[in-house]
Length: 381
Image (spheres, one colour):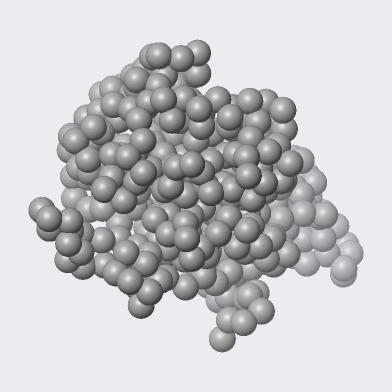
């Protein structure tokens, strides 16, 4: 058991200075003062520090993405410590462009590895391709029968996609939604958005021409260009979910977009932010030739959170939901995740007053302490 003393708690709402008793991977007790005289209880001093919920990253290529520049551009698997040192205690893994040399089985195995190492790892079945790449030969069966699979991935409006339209999206959406109901899961379709001229059109058509709720689909990379962002804001107004990608800068950065959305009084509870970590970023000329390629870092997620506070004057309790409670609710993980309360999972960040990460706990286990990585994966240096 662990006792965290005198820490300023943001749950994400500010709860004041508290003591927390941690045991069995859970938050057992939160009180103004907890006193124990037991040498078996590890005491962590939270004086002059802030406690935040562990971050949820809903879009990470945990087995590595890339490959658009041939085999030499395949991105490697993500190490455990890259996630935990960035304050990420829950991750959703998925495939990207490459559904040929990479498999959903491999993503599932990596998720199980991360779970065994102490964090929470879920995945989406599918990839950019349609028909969807699956384990059981059925998107619906994958979601219903495999614990870690909470939804499906597909791509639209991108030259790397299968050039699908509303009809295919309706089929995937109905499969995933029904599966989510049967298995009590999120049942959500993560839709990779490219720069294509159709934009969100196929999703909007699929929703308007079916009985599917708009929140069946969660389009990501909405901030990749101004035109798509404008569509994304209209999608929000209709009750849709949008996911913003880190590593995009200036007026299209997630922090800037969130600030704009708030000023427009949009329903910001339906906005999430993801790193697209260990996926490749790439640019192409007008003929579709690859110009440059690189790999994204999961560390950008926490940096974007800090940017909201330092550059856009958000209070901590205003900035935190996009990285904690919003994705937890959308992914049907709340209140166990994205939240600091009795009975919730002990996924916690303890930060200095300048928001530098000091300590990270995942299900009560210390992963980072005093800014140093305590636990690493089996083959990390």
